[in-house]
Length: 197
Length: 203
Image 1 (cartoon, rainbow over the protein chains, first blue to last red):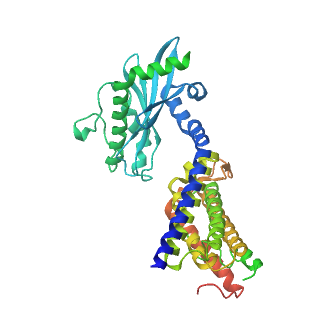
Image 2: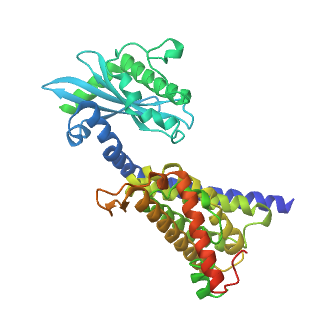
């Protein structure tokens, strides 16, 4: 009995101290990691979506808290009008967890500009092919207010052969964003307006 | 083992992955370029030195029955730490190495050194052992990565080595190239050791 108790106490202590150390490290490094991923991942993605230099776009960032999730949103303005948005959200159902998707939206024409993958843990060479331009370009020009679906389910997106789960996760992420825009369009506009003033 | 022995044994006698033939998975998978090999080696060295240190400190506290579990917790903590530091300061490298950074947790060199050395030796000696094996691993991966990158892409750490007329053997940066390259180095090392009459090699 004493021995079992000792096993439990020692193992719990080691785990507890480890968890504490990682929490401290995370609190200290989180903002730096966020900046790095803005610079190396979101910047290039925004450049591809809107064809403007990243420095111009990265500053136009808001974070919209809905539920317990923080949605990063980038915006472009022309005069006082908000013309384009890039919204980022997780798409559940990937083979290696959520795939973080960014969709560029043209608000004047209510169409998508394109889709970018911000983060994924899919199998290299299989699921990771969702990053390919040939897959991503299917999003160009899709309407903003209709959910997307894979062609096998009667939709408009051709899944990557051998990577149906990954393709589906990207579709889920897209629908997540479409839903977000449908419900919270006014909130987003209000936050951006408030930031601009 | 003396401190001096602990410091040098990982550089030739127990050089990973060639001598120990452990840690082959990262050695083969990430050495498609010299930079990746070096980065992976340094990350593994950091984990190795500190895991050896913590495990050596705790060796009298950790009950024998749960030692492997305890080692894994210590190693996993360090690996997550390395992953976060890499993301915060060397983001492009962390994207390149991707899944192989978390996989350092199950790198058998690290668990092997913890079990075979750090759990029976004092702190300083264990850290020296970790450092020596880690540096050996880093050099090996950098060399393996260099050979593959120079032949397979015509560059070294991203610099163009050959003129434009050089046609790279693309095969070398793919998986089979890794096996062949590793096999040739292993063979050459064994032949050299046999010639010198060293006794520690597998025959």
